[in-house]
Length: 114
Image (tube, rainbow, N blue to C red; front, side):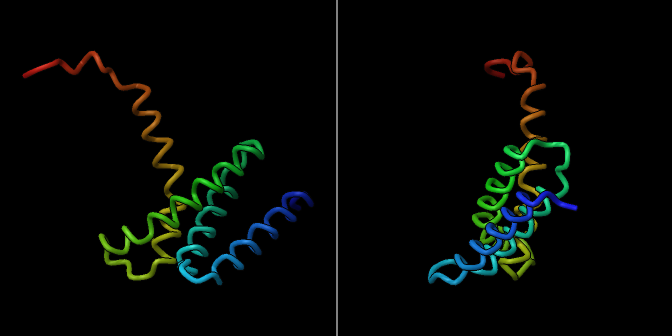
């Protein structure tokens, strides 16, 4: 069973996202899709502290929402909600992989000139 604080926070976050999707100028499908993808990231990140989970939620939500139009333009996916879900679900995993690769990158291997 989930902790009461976690359940309350999740309910409040989903209510805020639902209400925000009603405002003009906001793509409700993309917002809800990004939220669903971000929640998936948080739920599957069990070994992280609450602060890191919240950071992952916010980062995934923002990247998912902002990345949805580009995914729709560049792929056969037509729905911004589906595009936002995939962008949000993959954002943290891809970013962490890139960070690890940059940490192990040998900059001395690149020589100036040809």
